[in-house]
Length: 150
Ligand SMILES: [Zn+2]
Image 1 (tube, rainbow, N blue to C red):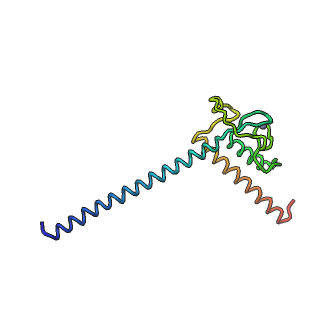
Image 2 (image 1 turned 180 degrees about the vertical axis):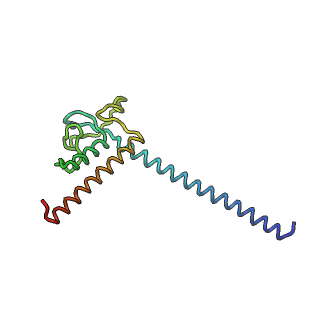
Image 3 (image 1 turned 60 degrees about the vertical axis):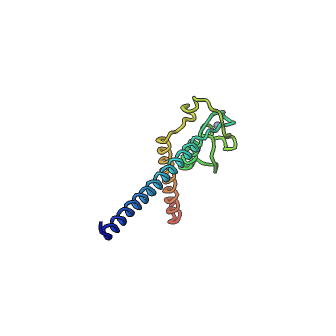
């Protein structure tokens, strides 16, 4: 092997090794990113499923139900409270207490069904639509007020 061919071989060999190392680190980063996203989603679903019990009606509800009920009421213009409340009896949030009860029937009970990943995505989509509708109505109202419509 002449020296130039040897040099070329070394160059190509180390170039290849460097390429493999860089690719591996890119793959590692992508995997870590994906793990982080999965972890975040898992925590978001867990937070949405946080269980509460109402002192007033003694019923269970979950955080996502309270949030949906809040924005739904706001959209209907029926909201008098500024914070979350019981989705069953509408008692103020101070009547809702975090529950650590772990009865398996709570996972599917119609008062407080647990949501999975698919349910969570539907919940987020519903929430986005509710917020957008509220924004649209506020914009129309502001336009009407500005232009002197009653
Ligand atoms: Zn209640």
